[in-house]
Amino acid sequence: MSQSPGARSSPRPLSLSRRVSWFLLAFGIWSWFVWITFVKNLWKDSSGLAFDDSGDPTGYFWVHLLLASVSFLLGTAIGAIGFRGLRALRGRPGE
Image (cartoon, rainbow, N blue to C red; front, side, top):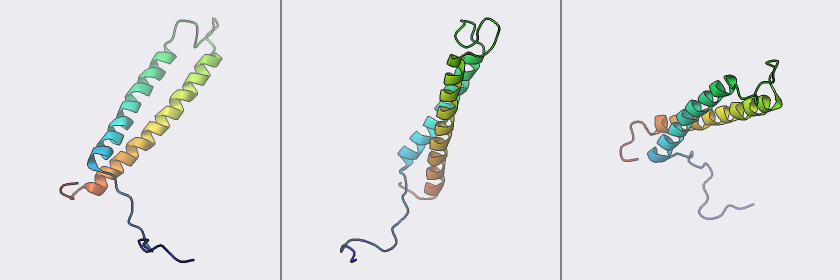
């Protein structure tokens, strides 16, 4: 197979702009704040949704705890990508 005229044999690694890197890092930090607050509020829920009358967790509790955990992990990964993007741009003026 032949390569197209503009193709390179070893592509340059993908780099993020400073603005995108900051956005991703801020999103990750925001995610930590929102989902940790959500889980604290879920744990203290007294409306009867998260815990039944005997104090046992309900399906509502488990589903929302799973949702919060997955969102927390995704936010962490996105924030880490932003952080790595900023570290890669360190020392590069004008990016």
